[in-house]
Image 1 (cartoon, rainbow, N blue to C red):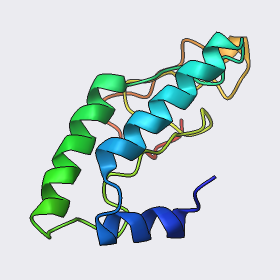
Image 2: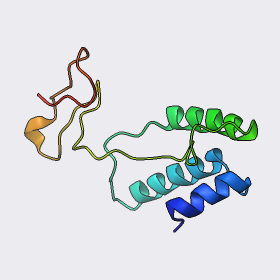
Image 3: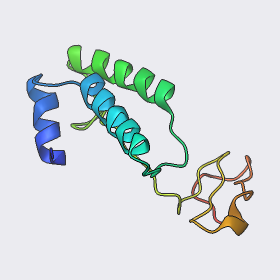
Image 4: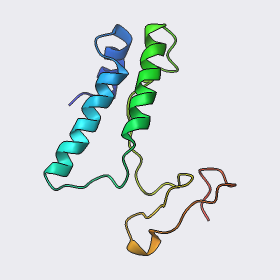
Length: 108
């Protein structure tokens, strides 16, 4: 498993890029699902791939947003994200959605 520091070093040296990290992360998610381990409630493959490409362009231009620009992340379903249900696991919360007019960090 690659550490965050190692991934950052690979990005900085050009050994690897955001597209490769994102493709590997998405493949790992698919493999888990095939094995019957549905870990992720939502997956945003198109957006992740698009953002990885944009980050790759920035790295090639030597203007990344940070030393980890383009690395894929996952968000635990304990945090409110605008437009998404925050269930934190229990079925009773599946329909709860964060109001659009509130900041993403707002908890009602």
